[in-house]
Image (cartoon, rainbow over all chains, first blue to last red; front, side):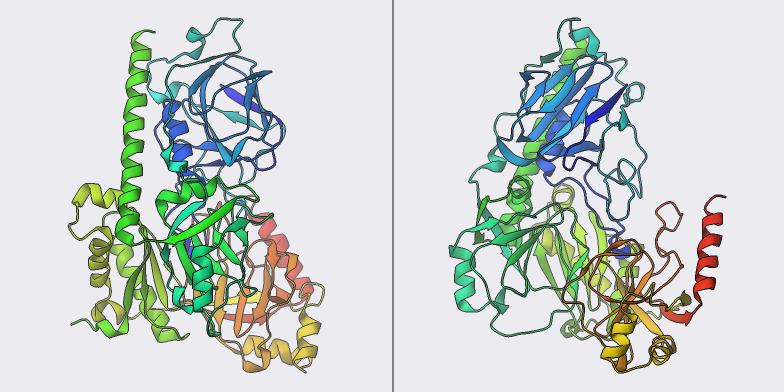
Length: 337
Length: 246
């Protein structure tokens, strides 16, 4: 079973949860920008969270399915269509042989995830399927997907005892939506509001800048990407000029650049940074952060580690419930096969 | 007995902790960072995901949900992790002596490859031969790898070679480019945008994703450079090309 890329998107890459254990060598973890949407896409497609997905930006690629397949698209809404008909996101969809998936119009968000039941057949690099573009390794030959690329999908190995999507589709149907999905998406609620842990250099900000950070609205500047979001907004200033020694950063670290602008480090960030770390966006807000498009607004508020831990755990428990629920739905599906 | 005044452990966020040993660039301090990294690599705590050594600090990435589910720590996950990290900061660990390797790296200091060679020589009022001699006379320590797979941050260059970064970075610098920024010297393992002053190029492959050991250099290694001619540079490159076919 395989799919072919008929038309290239602006940046479509194979990703998983990231490549950990090699940061000391300068090989950054990378991985999906929105771990919530990517996980749900896998669960709805009947996969575990370990399968690689395709992360799509808009304008996105066009894909041809050579055999029937069960897919799910979660995250941003790019108006996914099979031929001329829109199909829902955040639900499992069976697509037929020769179905053409494309994305007609941007509606919300910034990154969508395509998961296919069985997962893509590819080789891990250093324990992960994530694409490392700088290193030209991992994912699909270390690069974004391009026209005529062919990706194979695991069919036999997933131990389903023969889950066959073609049993659920008549010859005339291009696709069929299955009746369950994820509709409660609190993860993206309170759009634009982000909780941050004060960074190690938060107190380098002068008082006026601290006030601006927590009371003014910033927006995502153009040229923001998987490496980082440059922010437009009030210029912030340190109270003294102190040289920073390169030190540890993480996804969601907010740096103060020499010109007073803020930069939020994202999934393809470098492993260390040389600019003052003003704040760090909490893990529970990373999915919401990942879905900000150019021009989207942000407001920051301080919080503490205990709150950040509780909010992350709540989200992870919710994901576990979704996973179990999807698993149950699939078992029922096989029972009626 | 641990000396808490020499280090500070804090949370960057709810999934990342940092062990901070100081704020000056110093070999002894950096050795301590690497010793702690080495100990944690041999004695990982449950939920530990990655370790990032820098000049004077070690960043520790972990999975807080896993730890919470497995241990339900009363004082929260960060305190649980901090206790584990305290074990790694014992004097016995930090004073562990390391055996640094010294690696000799060939560099072709030709203007066609070292785009900024003439610029740096002129700015520092040196003849090119003097610049090369100064760059090759010192033994540099690799303090950390970062920025790109396998990019070594090395120091310190002779004060006569100290040059600020370029005010406008180059959109593209060739793989193997040997460069200077401030008191640091480094090598770009892959083609990349680059803001450092490029004074030469090495045929030595610092990063090969398909090799068993993708990154050749390690923090704590010592590096010396030696000059090679353009002809030797080309023959090194050709030999590597041949090797890749085996």
